[in-house]
Length: 87
Image (cartoon, rainbow, N blue to C red):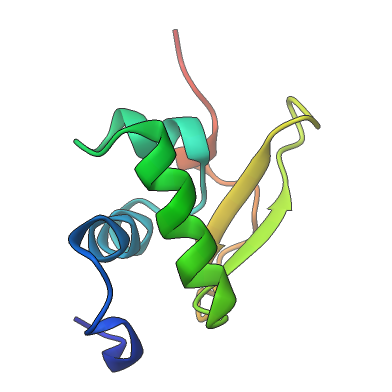
């Protein structure tokens, strides 16, 4: 794990960290779709990671009601290929 500050966090927080590390910027819904925890646990995990400045929040351009999350150390912009849902 790249960031030792999350070592004591619950498994859901670590999973969200790994998903964002591999997938890049995603919405909360996209993170929940890619993981097993419930949307509530994903929301809690994002809150924990934001509280220690490991995750940053941005506006999701296609739907301003949603937020886009990424790791703070990433150089990728918030709008990325992983953030657009294809149907």
